[in-house]
Image 1 (cartoon, one colour):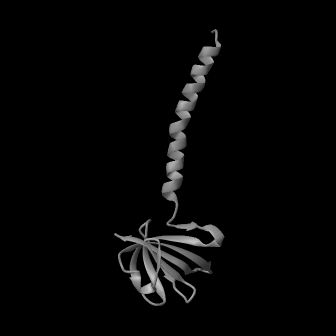
Image 2 (cartoon, helix red, strand yellow; image 1 turned 120 degrees about the vertical axis):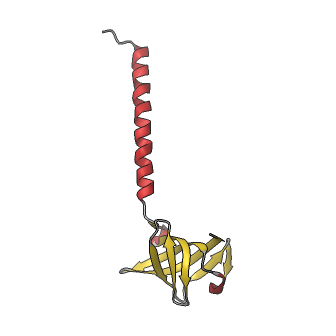
Image 3 (cartoon, one colour; image 1 turned 180 degrees about the vertical axis):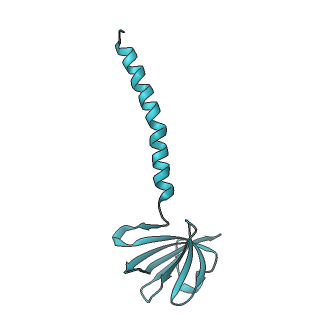
Length: 119
């Protein structure tokens, strides 16, 4: 069997074409299995989801993976809504949030609570 340069190019294109779907499936699998808690910059973690409950000491979020996560609030916590600084009282049940939290043991303490459009 004679293999010329053009045949080798065709074989390489077919190999790349077959590898691309496998790579896509692998990447999608990795992305879909990621938790709603992700490492953020500065050693903080992201908690993303919808506010279920909020008090002066904590916020409970229904995370994007369907779990419920409580995050403590303290005097250092700052709040924003639609990109503007707000008071804690502006964050409401039903708001979509991204919380940047420090993890201490098994407890999360919010450094920033950023709310967007309500669900």
